[in-house]
Image (cartoon, rainbow, N blue to C red):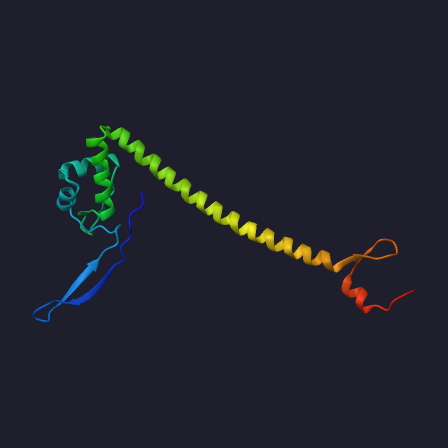
Length: 163
C-alpha cells in the first residue's frame, strides 16, 4: 500500500480582517503526529484495539523520545483498512495479516518488475545503438579483390590505384 506523501512546509497567508498571518502546515504522510486517542478516534476504534493490533504486528506506530505512540496519516489509513476487512468483509485477524503480507509481497514484486522493465528498455536502446554502429561500419568495409581480405573504404580511397 502506498500512502501519499505530503511535503513538510509552512505557508503564511494573510487572514481577512485584522491583518494577522496564519500558518498552514502540511506533514509527510509517514510522520507520526497523532497520539493513540486521536488515531483511535480517526480510525473509529477503541485505543485498546490499536494496542492489540500493534502487539500482533499489524501496525507499527512511531515513538516519541519519551516512548509515546505516534500514529501517522498512513497508519490511520491502514487502521481503517483493517477495520474494513474485519467489520465489513468478516475477516479474522489472521486473514488480515495474510492479506497485508501478500499486498507487501505484491508491491515488492511490482517494484522489481518496474526496475527490470527499466533495465530492459536501457538494454534495448543499447542494442539499437550497437546495431546502428554495426550498419555504419559494414557500409565502410568492402572486400579487397586479391585474396578476399576485407579493407576499410577509407584505406582504398587514399591508396594509389593499380591496374
